[in-house]
View 1 (cartoon, one colour):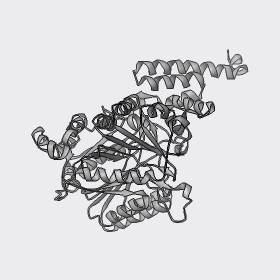
View 2 (tube, rainbow, N blue to C red; view 1 turned 90 degrees about the horizontal axis):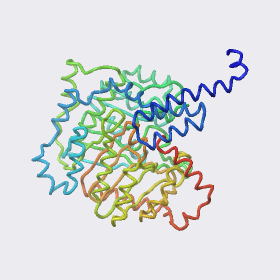
View 3 (cartoon, one colour; view 1 turned 180 degrees about the vertical axis):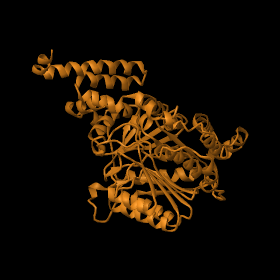
Length: 493
């Protein structure tokens, strides 16, 4: 037997591969996952020996999620429940806001309240920040004014030019005795040991989110922390699409083809308390700690301060991830689309919708709602680019208008419905954001805010090319094959 294996090592390896693949297929089918994801995983197990098993391990292995996040079951913790309850409005109060603020969007508010007890906050001041150069200026200004604490959570935190400037501001805050804590994703970030030592020596606490070996080779490993959060003193917060990397900053000497179009949000007010609660959940996960009675007073006092905000912008923070029972952000987007009467405008760098979102936007368009989708002309992922384009023909046939952003990379993640409701955050319109990564979005129920996003959409359209349906149908068979091939990967991208 040993001699045969030695003489036929490749065949023996192949037999071993398919024995393991058979077991993997059994678990895939037994777990009752999304059928599209299951079929994609099964296809690669069969068609790609050895490689298919690696794809399955990184993208299809659901029992890993259950094991990894068993100890992250903090949402029901009495402290978190207490924090959110203090911000909750009861049903009678919500009824009062229905005619003045929410109109027919009350259903969306109740959805998230029931899903994860996400409170609707009313006293908020909001400012949209366009592109990295403007966002970092506003963030650095807030960091320099911090008096008690700075809490950070980033998918990408690099120690390049902007990253080192960011660290400089954090170190300056520590010299003022401000407590600084950072969560950075182990796969997305590229922090050198020297940068980590700088922060450690300054007294900055920093932890990687789910560290992995060989992170440079696992850029799409599952269950990543895709959030971008900054919290200053519990009353100023930032979230959106902008990571800490030079890629996001448009400098005067930058090649025009590398232009990066993105959108971020500054929040001042009660919604920051919801951001704080979500940040705390991940903080105690990454540092492998638990809530202690000794920390309770600090958390209640400095982390959730009293806020006297005069502006009245209703905001709800939607958070989702592989540790939540529901796809909170996806369901909020789905409900927003279904509630539309006149117009839906979506900007996203990756458009790989699941069946629910695809059906919702097609139904909206066929029912007379104007649906406009803006995506990058090139993008930063070959597979995602063609997977996204595989949906273009069927949605344009329903009357949806697609605009290719041609100036550079469009990375904004926004949606505006009827000029009354808007969402902005970290969530893309794709399977990964909906089901796999940790994401966070702000849902804003304000006409003035929605109008500003609409105005920016009109401005961005000047840098776009609208796709013509008849011309699109004439694309080559090779092009269509690339789309079809990449679409098979859609649930795994």
